[in-house]
Amino acid sequence: MLKIAMAQMKVSPGHPDVNAATMLRQISEAKEQGADVIVFSELCLPGYLLGDAWEQSAFLRDCESYGRDIIAASQDIVVLFGNIAVDWEKKNNDGRVRKYNALFCAQNGRLVSPDSMPYPFIIKTLLPNYREFDDTRHFFSLQKLARELGTTAERLLSPLTLDIKGQRYRIGGLLCEDGWSDDYSLTPLAVLNRHHDIDFFVNISASPYTLGKNDKRNRVFGAQAKAAHTPLFYVNNVGLQNNGKTIYTFDGSSTVYSGAGRVVRVVPPYEEAVVTTDLDRIDAMSAAPQPPEPPIAAIYRALSYGIKEFLASIHMKRVVIGISGGIDSAVAAALYASVLGPENLLLVNMPSVFNSETTKGLSAQLAKNLGCQYMIVPIQEAVDLTKRQLETLPVTHLADGTETHLAVSSFVLENIQARDRSARVLAGAAAAFGGGFTCNANKAETTVGYSTLYGDQSGFLAALADLWKYQVYDLARYLNEHIYRRETIPQGIIDLVPSAELSSAQNVDEGKGDPIKYPYHDYLFRSFIERWQKATPEDLLVWYKEGTVEANLGCAPGLVAKFFPTAQAFIDDLERWWNLFTGMAIAKRIQAPPILAVSRRAYGFDHREAQDGPYYTRRYKELKAELLGE
Image 1 (tube, rainbow, N blue to C red):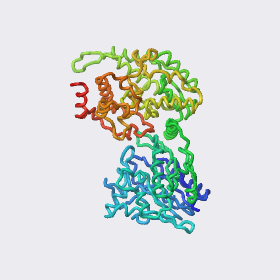
Image 2: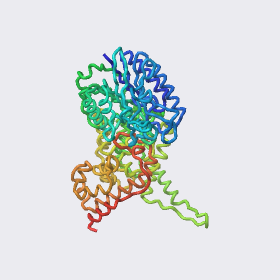
Image 3: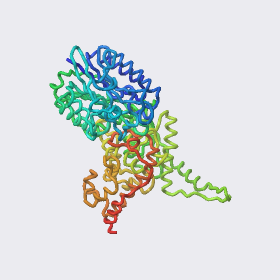
Image 4: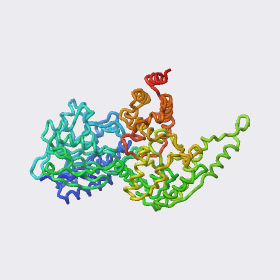
């Protein structure tokens, strides 16, 4: 009876020494459980999202060195693990040393070679080059190697043949994307199954969490196991990795699929664990319970884990949050308090003459409910001083000695307030408190740049910037009902009209708020970034003409007629936000803090953009003229 252990480990990216120590510990655990085989995740020794650290030869040599330690530890157990494989005699297309994303198999202190591979390791066949993935920048694929050798990847794809306890086993080894082959011309699992008698498949992965991904993976991998009539072990890591601008949680959720395609075992998400399963019993196992949960529960789990791990990675133990009485800062405060503990949070309310007694009272109530440290720092005096200095101190033209004065408009005054709060108060308070201060922006604001550079767009982390406004409200209710189990975020904050309160035109007591109509614009903006085939103004006018805008966006029916009584109003709104999204908002996003990703497309490295300005297609201009009767 073959016992196979899935090692769901926390990978520390860029630290093979730390990862090797974790692997050696988990190998010992697997031996104690009587496992014959232990399977680790993809690139578990070096980490996956490393930027251009792959170009450091010294780092590559270190990964090889720690890999030898793992190979040496394979006495009395078979160890399958992911590591970088280097052919120092060959080059990648960029002229740097040849690197493969590889699956190694070690037994009794030696590597076991795949049956038909030219190297003693399995090479990743399909290299993703979309979203956050940049594999083709660094790694040489099996397909490229096959062309170089004058053969085909199908001929090189081959199983690992092992003798364990006197019995022969053939393992089909896949690396992450090799299992997501729908849009490729080659399906590695099908090739292995067609040409070889496979006893079980392993898919070692480094798969970042995104909302809904696990459901899709279960459908895809379950169907593959069922088609092959062969069990499949999917092993993913936990931890936090980033590519600079975008931060990803890795949820693990390592899974065993039976030959009938059933999910029979799942390792709990975001937990390190070694879980052993008897191969012979898999097909007789019943489906693992997968209780339904609302999407916001998974989002909370990802955000809380991501915040905890990110703070630990930068050695930050205390946080300052500016709270306004609005929903975004309230959710940020409740979220960080659930992770750090309220004693490590300082909440700061910074009212001006435009802040109502309503929001000031709600801010105080939130801080009391959370049990956080709280302070009030009025900003009006500082804002007035800045305005007075800018308007009264002369601007001297040195060429002729003449003097003029600046004029501070109401719009500039709004910016001054936002910058005073962040650059002066929160930055100073964070330094004095011994921590950092947060950016509380949501995804709708980030999409169109509804924020102030060096003001409310500042902070060490934008934990909510991949959540649309409706998701922020969902998270507020989830925090109250399931995490705190009481009204921690006051209902008054949830019910209040969203408003920046930077002018009298945004008076919440009069029902005045942000110019963004979130029930509609959340979904419009989402179509700009999250659709796989991204929507443009041309698409919106086609849908408007067809009367299918709401159906295509996924928002509530009737909103277009409610908000835009004429085609002119619809087009004016569309162009206003498209111009911002593709204009100034890009410059703001480039300078924004790192974003914690949870969606199918997050800002940062996941959504690469250039500052080229707005563009309208020829077809858009024709549709616009038609709709306006021009």
